[in-house]
Structure formats: C-alpha cells, structure tokens
Length: 279
Image 1 (cartoon, rainbow, N blue to C red):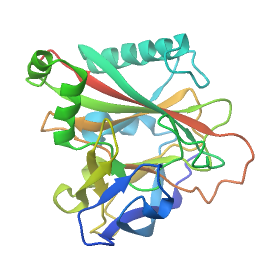
Image 2 (cartoon, one colour; image 1 turned 135 degrees about the vertical axis):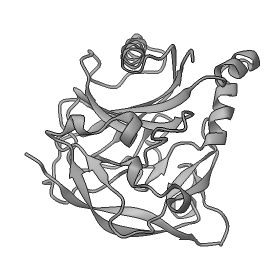
Image 3 (cartoon, rainbow, N blue to C red; image 1 turned 45 degrees about the vertical axis):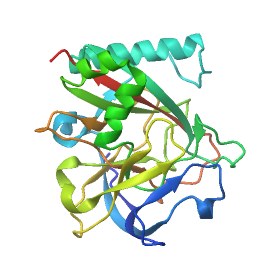
Image 4 (cartoon, one colour; image 1 turned 120 degrees about the vertical axis):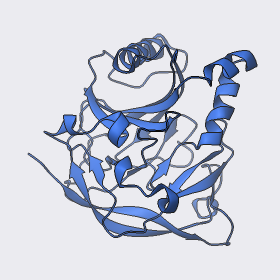
C-alpha cells in the first residue's frame, strides 16, 4: 500500500545575523546552536513502498536495499559486533558498487521516538535532524581523505573516483513510523539556487557541509519508506567525484502526522562510508 504523506520540511530562508550559515553541536543550549532562519513548508513526501527499485544512486542519489545481516541492536565502540557489522556493509558496498576499498569512519544511533536529553546525547547517540542537509561539501572530502590516509595514499586515491555514502537503517523490532527519514531526489534540486554552504563548528570530520533553501514551489521530490524495518536500508550519496551522475542527497527527519502515537522504542543507525575505486 502506497502511503504518500504531507510533512513539514524546514527550509533555509536567511540567517539571523546576516552572516553565512553556521551550526554548533549539542554542547550549547538549543537557542544558541545556529544562526539559521528556517521556514517549515508542507510538502508531499512520496512513499517508496512497493516502488523500491524505482530509484538508484547514480540517477537519484539514493536507493533502497535489503539488509540480510545479523546485527539487530546497538553495538559498543570497538566491539566484535561493530566489527561484524562493518564487515557486512563493506562486503555489500564492494559487491554493489564494484569498489576497491571501503573505509567506515563514523556511526550514529538516533532515537526516533522520545527525544534524548542534552545529557543523553553524545558523539554516537543523537536525536534526528529536522533540517534538509548534506553531511559534507566537496572541499571537506579532500580534508577527510587526507585525515584518514597518509599523504601519499591520499594523493593516489584522489586521482580516481571517490564517493561518500550513508547507510541508514532502523534497529530493533519496531518499524520507524514517528520520525522517518525523508530524502530528496537529486534530479529535482537546483544546485545553483537551492544549495548553500554551512559551517559546522566543533565537527571533527565534516566542518563544512550543505543546507537547502526552496526556490520553486513543489519542485523538490521527496521520498521516504513507510513502516521501514530493520531488514531494510537506505543508501544515499553524500559525495561523488564523478561529475556526470547524481552528486548528493539532501535528507532530513520529518514528523509523520499520519502515524499513530506509539510508546514503542524506535531507533535508527547510520554509518558514513568512504568509497574508493581503482579507476
């Protein structure tokens, strides 16, 4: 059953201080975390349920795939469970993309039900982000590669295709209903008018990224997957150095007003993967 919904997307309109957009992490009070002025806009968010194969990474910057692994709950940093999950995802990406090397460099668990308090949030446990964004910009990719590889390796790697891909999936027994993920079709984005750089203060991996404005009514095409379960995953692009394919996917959480209120714990896991190719 297709379940398109109306959801609010918080688009950038201006900044409160007239300066370029900036954002700080959760170490300061919420009111002081950014200079963004955003406008919530009701948009149709299209359900991919039953149409999972209608989108793909190089055309739309996103796709849906099955997770057939064994990791169903949170893992601890450095644990055997984390190692197994990283191996599963690395194998999946190499087979799906034909990549030569995958480096998984960051993960985040997010509460999709009751919000975490500031004290409960940390580098790996956070609340959903209700703002369409891309996790890094092109200059940030060069910094990331140089951070993760030695100089010689980095120079050699950047001569070939590089991607950053986010793998997003629910965790646990309960499907995601209350605060699902919405992803924007790259083909519907006006790169010259809708995309704006933003500085992320205090970020180790991505000090600069992109935020989104809305310039044409109803032009953006947004997708989600209703009743998404832990055996399903979104793959979506953060960056691709190949110029003639979809480059990135703006993404955001949204409140599904059609979903009944639930006391069930809902949780997601996302991992960021740096993808290398031999040519």
